[in-house]
Length: 235
Image (cartoon, rainbow, N blue to C red; front, top):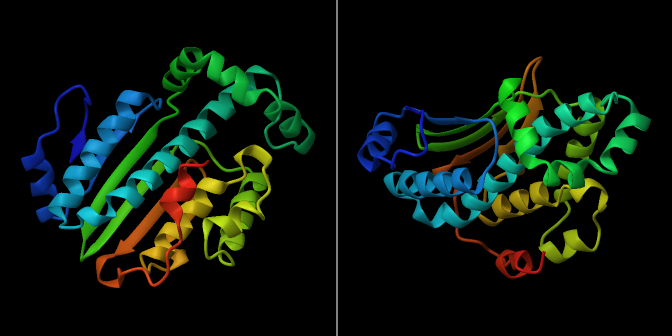
């Protein structure tokens, strides 16, 4: 099931039918606006209700928002570096470009949104439930650089030693947003009893795919209180 126009109200019955028939639900966009974020949350609410997994809404809503923001940032970053005449794969160029990247792309948001569409730098958001496994995928049309791969892998490896947000906040590197969002996702999965290997971020020769896999039968009540909700309010 593909949703072509987010301005059309969600059809709950079609979403419920897609879940029942184990069909993926897909949205495609070229930017991340407040309207799209709200639409995704509404879709997620209906989807999880159809899966009888309403308790996952908080963690999956956060995870969706984080992965969508990362995908949008990656696409915008490619355009920004091209416009500045910088090589995103060159370490010195990368450091130089990232100094002003966030500020300039925030101030000129509409400019970059237009270029992302012109250059077909899309973001795909896909939800599915098959064989009692919920899968959330966020795909963007940008290939990870080697430095980005190393940074992401480093954060995911670091997350293995954390049991709480307090552990993460006292230990993380604040460079480029620190990758804290990925760490929080991993902690949330841990709280649900899901293995960390259920979060994957990888590239092929055309896209980057971030995927969260949640086997419903593995979900267990949290054995410890990670204090995620209280700590998230402070970030």
